[in-house]
Image 1 (cartoon, rainbow, N blue to C red):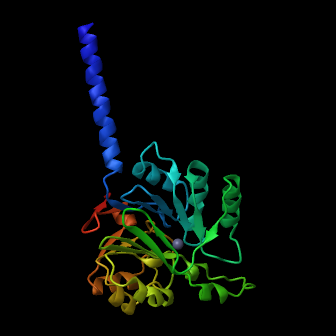
Image 2 (cartoon, rainbow, N blue to C red):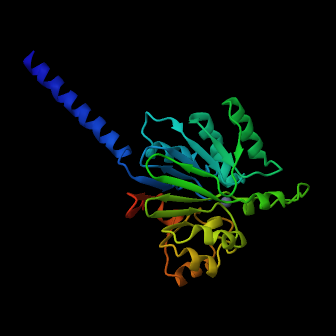
Image 3 (cartoon, helix red, strand yellow):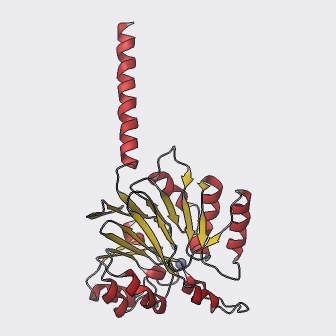
Length: 288
Ligand SMILES: [Zn+2]
């Protein structure tokens, strides 16, 4: 009997240590930004120091679910905020499964007059969860109680109003939601698939940043010298699929980043990339 009690106490202590370990892993009072490795597309998970869970884009398929399950504790099935930067399939398809599997408190995207097929499907799935997509415009801001803020830099209401409602060739990329994430002294700029004309317009508002999520998977039309001079990032992260058919990232963009002496991390070469900050310093972990 004594031996049985001792064994039981040993198991209980082990369980308490395990729970403590799991709890502290997901509640370390730091900001985590994870560039999920979803192949050719974008999915970025943010867990703030006060455990606000945010997903920006869902990638081209269900791979985003693996990323979420690795970076959220198993007891947490709620995403406080989901942002779809724009409704192209490589950013939005995975969100269908996310909305089905997680409780989503708010869903935001760019305001576009037309609907892609995948956006129509998403709206149906959102409606089943009694949710509808709301729109973000320059200046919209999210804060949480621990000093985290995320400000929308794009699209402006003027850019939305100037869209030709009857155009069959809507430039969804150019209306991508762009957000600046701030925590203490740390800054990260998340850019969707916007092009360099847009990036030049928002560079002044963004100011100096630590991390740049390179626009449009490193396409040759995403960045300019002027943009990199104004934002001066230390690390550029490219979310891109191995041997993708678009030739992303372009030699032009890689050359520009090299010229500005910016360290480059790529999901096709480095796997999942996680940036962790306490508001003063930050560290970067790559899977491979
Ligand atoms: Zn894309």
